[in-house]
Length: 118
Image (cartoon, rainbow, N blue to C red; front, side, top):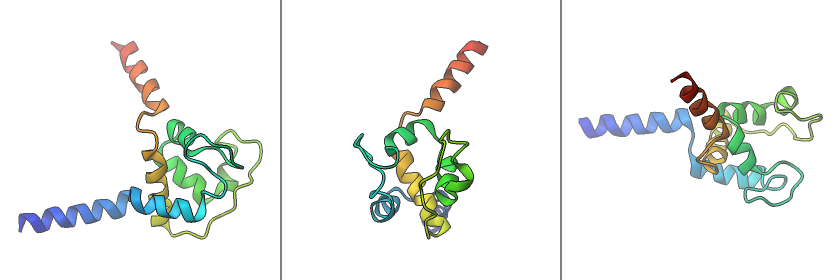
């Protein structure tokens, strides 16, 4: 019974939080034509840089509706199309992009702020 509970918990967390491997597949099929993940040149920004500066929720929101979020990301214009993906696919892609950069810029700010308080 305990094993079943653990398995159900893992399945539920996967559905809620995304899946890196599935996100990699969705990225390759829908995003890689305009974005790189290794510092290369492409029409859109490299996802390693995006992963360094953005939370997964921000990445998901931008990917779902780029025309509504481009200014918040600091871009002067939007060239990204609205992609016909399911909510879970957006979460999976955001999970994959976030996994590219395990150390985040926003973590530095948080640590610095916590250190300054002490």
